[in-house]
Length: 231
Ligand SMILES: Nc1ncnc2c1ncn2[C@@H]1O[C@H](COP(=O)(O)OP(=O)(O)OP(=O)(O)O)[C@@H](O)[C@H]1O
Image (tube, rainbow, N blue to C red; front, side, top):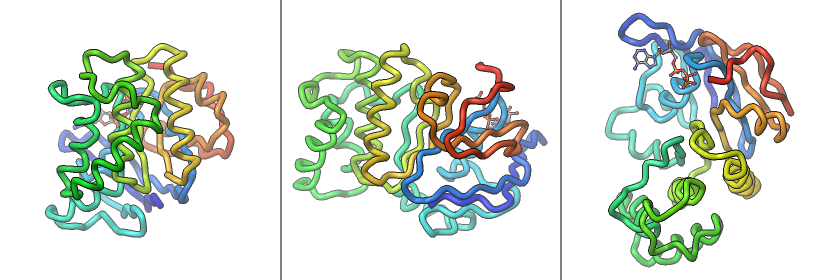
């Protein structure tokens, strides 16, 4: 589902963010990506979203080699990935319903399908009652659940979560983890970059650890790891 073959990334300022990274994440897996600040986690995510290009190597997403695709094909690739960010990134002037519907409108989904799917995903993240609220009327956990609903409404095979619990208190963070687990249980592959030690240790999922741009550990049912600073 997600494959990196000997991927290296050097930014313009000669910072080598990734060196020879190879990984293979299969359909339906739940994978934590861990490592100290600056290790290269966000770079892996940016490469998958085609926000950055690798300097070397090959990246395959959903059986598609995305390394050399043309710019005009990028929106098509991004439809295969739902993304959830630490800071939610909701549109403040749109309601919960409209925020989620917008993700479908911009890719030209038929209004009838939008009217069917939006209530369905809002109910999945337990937000049906908040459909008419605006983001600033919601708690942090509720906002993050809206962003999860938006990420999955177009049924992408892959969901990427970049530090999704970073702005949330521990209890709310678990609420988000339950939502992500449920989505994973329905077959979506989930890749989550995180510093949340307790969550990683508790979930016992596959853990890929990156340090100074290299994969140093890839463990089924792994823990957070001792050597990683938590900031
Ligand atoms: N746009 C950029 N231009 C130049 N260097 C960059 C850029 N983005 C990241 N870097 C550098 O690449 C390295 C890896 O950064 P990256 O953001 O991938 O780390 P990270 O593991 O996501 O860290 P964090 O946990 O703090 O988010 C760091 O040395 C960083 O300074």
